[in-house]
Image (tube, one colour):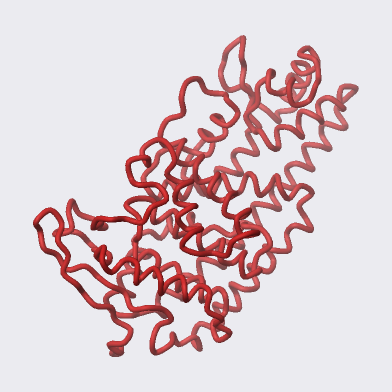
Length: 389
């Protein structure tokens, strides 16, 4: 194994948690010193850049870009939350947003809904504020509002020791910087974000930032979700992407053991090159999957629209309902009436026609307050989440 210079390695500092003394890790500031060797990574960097460019250009193909973004962000929210241990699916989230379930949302769905809110907030915030510690706190506050997160100081950096794995710092897999080292680490992190680094391609810088944020672990909860969201927001801020269509949660979920192992490789051995290789592979695969999903959704909408147009005299009202279900794949007659202005008999007839064509299915089995699902569309959105409708 090649010996790594000590300048790439962090240091350990004693921290005390509930009368137990542990060694907490303090990462060195970015960029790595000596710099990461990008030579062997140029092929993977080029492949990732090409995949990102193709994804960024997909807006030419998508007739309704905000709609695709609306749904794709929700898929990422589900996957990112599943990494943290939630059990809810994209179907659960869409049902909740369509008010197709009774009662208060369960905590899992609330957390996913908060993630959607944080993504859209972050995108809008980039118009008035650069990525900064302030923005990161604001994103965190959005993520943890309500439900289980309320007790974990939403929007505030931690004032006590945390840890990863194990039941306490003494048997943890990883112990992040102690509280008295937290702000110096974060200040250096923010300075690196803002520092011009022409020698570092944006994708490489995004990969460095992600690991550093995960190592600092500045919050009591929600660090993983914030850290994954920062990758995409940084690429949008750098104008690598015009819209936040790149999310790595599916890739990280599928390679969870390798992901956590590589984070430790950086901390323990300064092995940034192994992490960056994994990261660039993930970007390329994720961008290609997003492009494929987008084209399949576009094809589905076009095919179904053509079938509806050829079906008969009620095509106008049926097409309006089909268009609405592209944004609300779970839909009730009551919501359709409000959104379209059509009468209840017209809506019921349109739903019946969509059922006859096999485009939607009624999912409650009830005679009243029925909920209709655009099943093929939901299946495409569920693809890769490890869930079934």
